[in-house]
Amino acid sequence: MATFLGIDYPTWWFLVVGALFSGYAILDGFDLGAGAWHLFFRKEESRRIALNAVGPVWDGNEVWLVIGGGALFAGFPILYASLLSAMYIPFMLFLAFLIFRAVSIEFRSKEPMLWWRRLWDTSYFISSIMLAVLLGVVLGNVLQGFRLGPDYEFVGHWLEFINPYALMTGATTLSLFMMHGALYLLLKTEGRLYARLSVLVKSALVFFLVSFSITTLYTLLYIPHLSDLFKSSPAFFFLPALAFLSIANIPRLVSKHRYLLAFLFSAITISLLLLLVAVELYPVLILSTLGEQYNITVYNAASSERSLRIMLIMAAIGTPLVISYTVFVFWTFRGKVKMDETSY
Figure 1: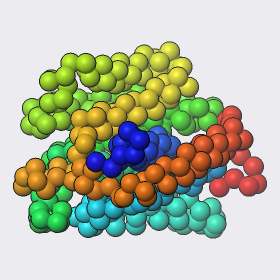
Figure 2: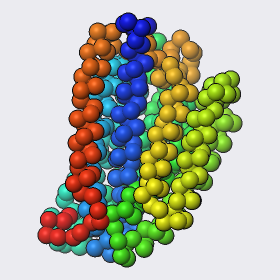
Figure 3: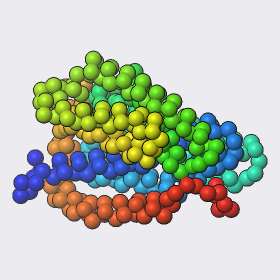
Figure 4: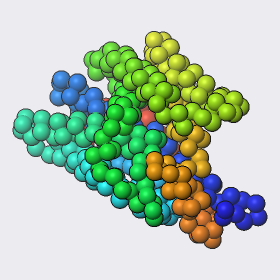
């Protein structure tokens, strides 16, 4: 265990990486959710307003993914190598859709032709959906584990990652992001689009509650290692209780049209669900289905103590700067979206 003066550096870096990916899920989650609604808006003006709602922030939100990936590589290089080599095709698809989403946002308004705009609208819509689903597929496979052998190498076939639980987790992730995105758009729009979204958000709630319930039930019945800690240590039961209370509060707030609070609780729900994953898996990062000796943990995957110590100091300096930048951007572009000559 890499410790110095009683400090468990691998665990602290595990928390840093988790916080960065949680920030990405919250911030880019509503971008992806907004994109997943794009073709549900029939009018040209509505689609432009929806794009302009995420336009000033989507690329800044992706910074959290870049930093999170860099932190994962620096702090847990063995995990980074094993995960990306095992799930090479899902990650390459993720990068491809990430590029297409960015291109779609930037190219859509460059030409006035109807076919051109419809082409990039469709690309934006599909890319946003697939990005959310692929994130869920990766998470689902990490949750249930996969076949890691000697030297932490994946010894299975890539098609094994397309399994029922991974697809259920992908659908749940998509539904959560669509709900999150609809709430964000409600905060940024008005008039006819606002009225349309007030109806769509209820459909998103149903989609999320149904998919989340099915995935949770499947987890409890068929993946027992994800609930062992809470059964053996009732003191941790407050975490799933908080998550369920947070989820239950969203429909109540939506029914009262308190969309800002609903959006905040949606963000809290994302954080609590990822925290549940981290607590239940810790100290394991990837569970090997071939035997515990092949598990990747925060300790056997961590960089040297010296590296972790230096990087924690850098994270302590850099993280407040990223948070400050994010807050500044959202404050600058606060309020309802207004169309002008610089709009998408």
